[in-house]
Image (tube, protein in one colour):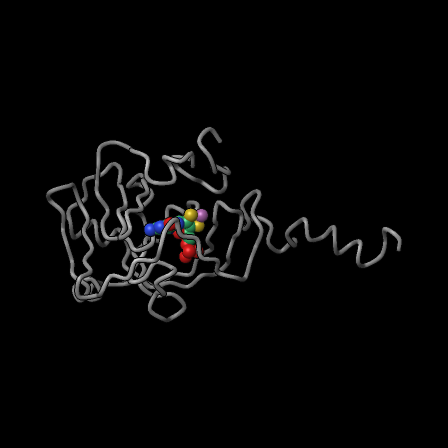
Length: 204
Ligand SMILES: Nc1nc2c(c(=O)[nH]1)N[C@H]1C(S)=C(S)[C@@H](COP(=O)(O)O)O[C@H]1N2
Ligand SMILES: [Mo]
């Protein structure tokens, strides 16, 4: 076998994404067709008749029950997602309510948000990263109700940041004056998490 053999070339090719993906895969990421499940704890199963979603300052939040939430204007979005464990998945198709819509109905007063979830997971984001058509509370994936292991009944979808910011089983977005770290941010993940600047860990 020489260095020119197809096997040798194939081996080397796998280290790099194909040219057609250039500009679409953040540094250090590889493309997968799978949809891995990554959860820090067990999957909660909240019945829809006990589910609600709230947004706003602590103590004066706007709250919708499931039927009310599903009646809000929704959007279909197809986006690429990037996990800090280095997989990138192209063209994921979601349906959900834009956070712009939720903040408009609640009365916007940022500047920061803490997402709270069933099971206790939290993650922090600047409100500027949740507005301007950049974030949704999604309840369907690929035309089907969002599977519990992927965050159903509903999850945050913030595709321009690493996917740990896309809180599964999200129940509220609490607006705050301070950018306090959430669950993974407390364990050393980057406070902001921009995949294009490879902000995986604190100090990156
Ligand atoms: N509530 C909650 N949301 C979460 C997590 C979690 O453990 N709990 N994991 C985060 C991480 S690290 C990633 S990569 C994605 C994984 O989403 P998936 O399981 O649908 O691929 O969810 C994020 N949202
Ligand atoms: Mo992740």
